[in-house]
Length: 241
Length: 183
Image 1 (cartoon, rainbow over the protein chains, first blue to last red):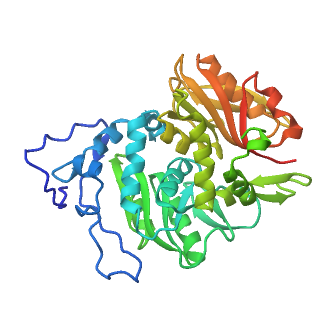
Image 2 (cartoon, rainbow over the protein chains, first blue to last red):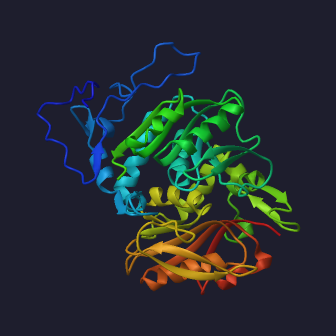
C-alpha cells in the first residue's frame, strides 16, 4: 500500500523495503487524527511537512518510514507458544535493540504529541512497557488497565471473552475524567477482545477514545472489527500462523 | 536520594505526596503503596524518571531489568533515556522463548522469576528496577538471575522502600537507590 504523504525531500528512487521474515510492513497513508472540537473542524494530515520532526522527515523515502523495517525485523517469532499452532510475536527482542525500541516510541510520540491527548491507557503487562514512555513524552497521564485484583482501591471492571470462558480488565475509579481524550496501547492486537474491553471501560466514564495503538496486528483474527468507531494504528502486521 | 536527607532533591516531595496509601490491601494490616497515582501526574512521573536517569546516565549501564509488572512502568523509560536494553523479568510461563529461573520465598510457599536466555550477556552492567522494595526477595532473585549469566549488577532502583522489612540487607551486597521511604 503506497503512502500518499508528499515527500518533498525525495530526489532518487527508493530501494525496495528489505524482506522481513514473517512480517509484512505497514506502508500506508496514516489516517489523520481529529483535533478537539475547539480547533479547525478539518482534520489535519499528520505527517505534514511542517509538523514533522527533521529526523522523521529524513527517515522517509517515498513516504515509507525507514524505521519500520528495522522494528519489524527486531521482533522474534516463537512457534507453538503458548500452544501448538500459535506463532507468538515476541517483542522482548525489540526491547533489546535500543534503536528499534527508541524508534517505536518515537513513531507513536510523533503521531500523538500536540493532539490534546491527556490519557494513555496501557493494558497489562506488555502495554506497560510501551505506554509510559509515550505518556511521558506527550505529557499525558498513564493509566494501567489490569487483570482482576491487582489494583488496590476502588475499581471498575469490564468482562471480555476468551477462547474458553471470560476474563476481566479493571481500571481505577477516578483515574480518568469525562471529556478526556485517550489512546489505548498494547503490544499486539489479535482478536481485539482486550482492547474492546478497554474501550468500553473508558467510554463508560465519558472518555473519548482517539485511537488504539499497537506495535503488531494479526489481521487474520479481525480484531479491528471489535473496536467499533475507534481507529487502530499499527506499525507491523503478521500472519497469525 | 537514597537516605541522604540533608540534600533531598526538591522533586522528591512532589513524588511522595502523589503516592496513595491503601489500607488493608491485599489483606488486613498491609498499608499498600499505590504508585498509580504518581503515573496520573505527568510532572511527578517525569520527575521520578528524571531522578533515576540523572543518576545512571553516565555509568555505562547496558541493561535495565524490570520486575513484572510495576517494574515495567519505570524500567523502560529509564532504559530509553540512558540507551540501555530493557529486559523484563517475569512470572513463570509468560516469556515465550527459552528461559532461566530463580526461586524466591513468599510468605507462604515459593514463586519464580524468569528471564530469557540470551537477553543479557556476560559483562553487561545492569540495573534492577521495581516500584518498591519490601523484603527484598524478588530483587534478590533478580540479582541472582543476572549474575548467573555473568552480568554485573550495579544497583537496584526503587521508588519506595519499606525500611522496616530490611530488604536492603538481602541484596547480596548490592547498593539500593530509593526515592521515598515509608515507615
